[in-house]
Image 1: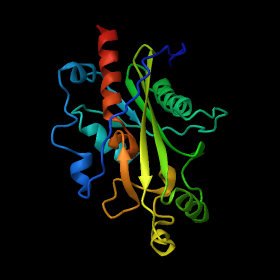
Image 2: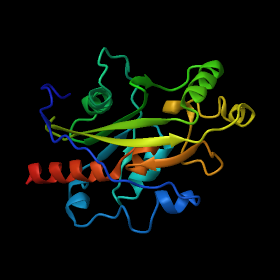
Image 3: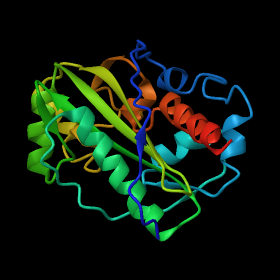
Image 4: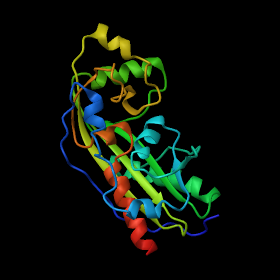
Length: 232
C-alpha cells in the first residue's frame, strides 16, 4: 500500500492542429508517428507498467509506444465538485491511477480520463438512449473541446500529470442521419467514436487526434520520460 500522497509535477498541454482526413487510419496512425525517440521510455517501462483503464482504444494507442504493460480497470467514484475541465480530468485520471497503485505497489501506473465540453458545459458518457440523443443533438454541427487528463504514479508514490486539449467540429447532420448514432457509443464521452471509420459525425479536429480517442501519446511519453529522469 502507498502511504503517502503523490507529489504533483509536470502539467502538459498540446496545441498542434491536425485535420481529419477522409482516410481516418492515416490521420490517426501515421507511420512511426508515435515511436519513442530514445531508450528512455523503454528503460523506465522495464518496471511493471499498468494501464488503469479498460478502454480498448487506450490499449491500442499505448501499444504504439512499444512498452509492455498489463491492464487493470479500476472501479472509482467519478463524481467531483470540480467544474474546470482541465482540473477535472487531471483529478479523475489521478484517482484511477492511485486506486490501482494502492493494490500494486512497486508498479508504474498510468491513468487517464476524457471529457467533452460544449459551450462551457461538461458532457459525459450517455446514461440512456434518450440522453444519447440529447447529447448528439446538442453537439450536431457545432464545435466543442475534448480534454484528456493523464496521470502516472511511480513505485515511490510520486505522481506526474498532464492534460491535452483538442477542438472538434461535428458535422451538421439531418435528424434522420443523426438517429443512426443514437445509443451507438454509450461508453464514450460525447456519445460518439471518432476512431469508427463508419462514423461520419466528426468533420474536423484541431489538436491531438489521439487525445480525442482517449490517450494523448505525446503527453504519455513526456510523463514516462519525467519518471525516468526522477529514477536516475
